[in-house]
Length: 211
Image (cartoon, rainbow, N blue to C red; front, top):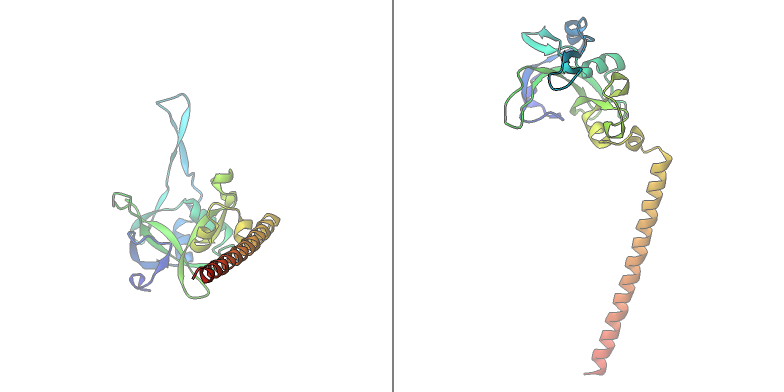
């Protein structure tokens, strides 16, 4: 597949992408022994008593490039599945990507991105979604992650899954409230239009009397 000729939803236009796809089995064979290596290591803190945790990527060689094998996204995909929990879009292959910083500098290493294909044939990145959003107290742990395509994740934002699916009683109440407010607004507009028509009629009569 020629990656230069396809659009992948969710992929930054400034990213550098290796023009090659990797199968789910091929990536698994490369990372399986390192996938669950510790992601952080304790180091003595110089500024205060105790220790701090430093991120520790475990990199392996994949087709000539060192890539992080113990990322939480890879752990998620290979334990909970490759399908979007909302729309069912399924991840089909991986690509190697280097993102750019705000200063335009490329990352030192490639990382793997999972690409899915929607029922309509669009290519989209598969993401690591927080089941309980971080803004609502959700933790950065595997138990709180689920696979979701970029479009569904973007729609969900920092809301709950129920918001995305629109099934909770709170959503029904909110929709009913908006429906009532919309009906009230329509009635108000109709009343104002009636008042305007009445004023125009009075003005017309006044002009006819004062000709």
